[in-house]
Amino acid sequence: MPAESVTNGADHDIFRPVPRTGVIYVMAEAAARGFRYGHPDWANLGQGAPETGPLPGAEARIRSIEIADEAHEYAPVGGLMALRDAVAQLYNARFRRGMPSQYSAENVAISAGGRTALTRIAASLGNIHLGHVLPDYTAYEELLTIFRAFVPIPIVLDRAEGFALSPARLRAEIVGKGLSAILLSNPCNPTGQAVRGGGLRAWVDIARQLDCALIFDEFYAHYLYESAAHSDGPALSAARYVEDVDRDPVLVVDGLTKNWRYPGWRLAWTLGPKQVIDRAISAGSFLDGGPSHPLQCAAVPLLDRDRADGEARAIQAAFGAKRQLMMERLRAMGMYVDPPPMGAFYCFASLEHLPTEIADGHAFFRAALEKNVIVVPGEFFDVNPGKRRSHIPSRMRQFVRLSFGPEVQAVRMGLDRIDAVIRGA
Image (cartoon, rainbow, N blue to C red; front, side, top):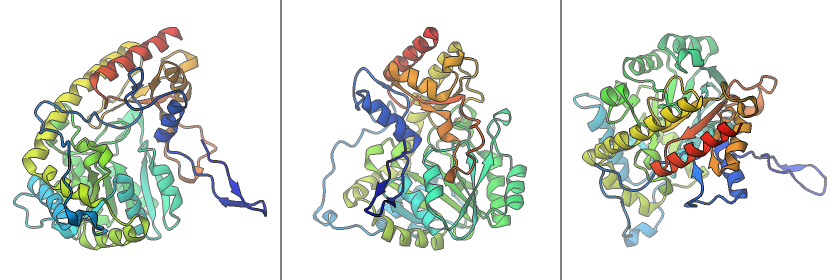
């Protein structure tokens, strides 16, 4: 909900209203009804957080961190060189074996979480048209509003086309709208669709030819299913199709939050051309000051190729089973997920065939909340910077996003209660 304006004695606004992102809004509403993390009677299918415990086939979870004396000091704004190098070497090993152009530590900047990384990039953009796809991650809305140097331009994806953007249409959007950069999550939050294989190669080729920067939020790169897991696993990245790491206009943002299942660490990185990374680090010097020194030290071993690949395969097995469970249950309830998610850990479900009183995302959210279940209305993913499309009803109003990120017991409990909501309606 919008924040109240703060006024001074002259009775004019000093601080603007700052809205919560969609996910934070639903979590606040749930907290007002008694939700807290770990509460046994709540099913949190709303927040985008993976289960953080042990998984079969994965390395043991880190339980403690030893802090050296020097780690009590500030770390460099761009991150520790040891961690920057570990990130670069992981991408080289996974995606660039035998290629003449390789990433180095100078192609990497470390930040305190993905939003911080994206904010640094946004602060580094010039006076350009920045494309963003719909639907996409809710936090992009305020990010694309607050910085006035660039103009956000929506690229609307159609459910009938599988929420996909073909290379031919990508080229048309760039040329027709004069785009100099495009931001998107891949795999996508909330639909789970992924640009991959030959399609992703074509995207990178087009970006290179037209000098249009592609900013890939790859926070779900380990969460791949079915054909995506077989052909693109253990991880998906545009870095595979970059020819020259310092010339191709491709930025990758990732971190420990989702793909290593350490959301509480708030540790992320940006990978791209050295010149762009330098500018993002400069932005970090006044925006955030840099990430935690002790956590960076502890993160270096997590970037080992074998350890990272083991984590990815363990995720795909465990989350693939939960994906199948959720899709089957939702289909039986009359909530359709079409196309099915090929990545991430969400089902973007249509409510159009449900009873009228719960066929709206916000109404469904309220009804689920009565059963101690948290979901996110689809309208929050219809990213609308500056509310420039206020006269158009959201195309996402009959959708809801449900997460199969939590442990399977919580997913089952949440689905059972949603079933009761629908039967009651």
